[in-house]
Length: 152
Image 1: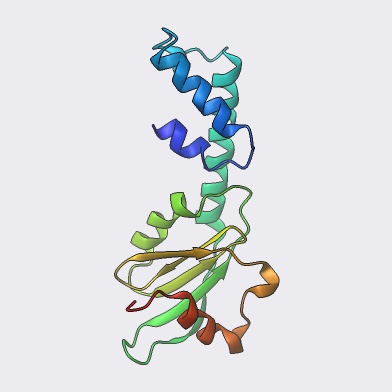
Image 2: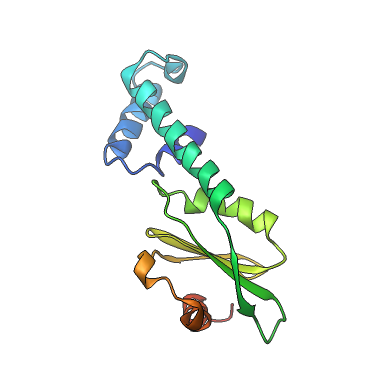
């Protein structure tokens, strides 16, 4: 399941068909130990994709830099935002790291595919934005209010 979860975040359009074939071979094709065969072409491809996605998660953890954008008047919590452009769809895989590491502040990570927001209680995901649509300092506070679900 870990391999499938990670490979699913890869951007290669073949990922679903490769994952399906691997699953089929393991469950119906009599190849229960298939994932232990590194010379199999599909296993090798899935492992390459896993490494690529894992590197992208590592880059996100290492290179995301939040900038202070203000303070929530109601809660008194500081608000931060970061822009990151991953190669793969890693936001949901990387978000728990940021949730734990930066639990004491409100933050948003904006990416082209998906954005993640932390309000001190839970993560919220919204559609991605192009870099040009990422708000500048003046528009950021308004954008964050619009990005949060009602009641957040």
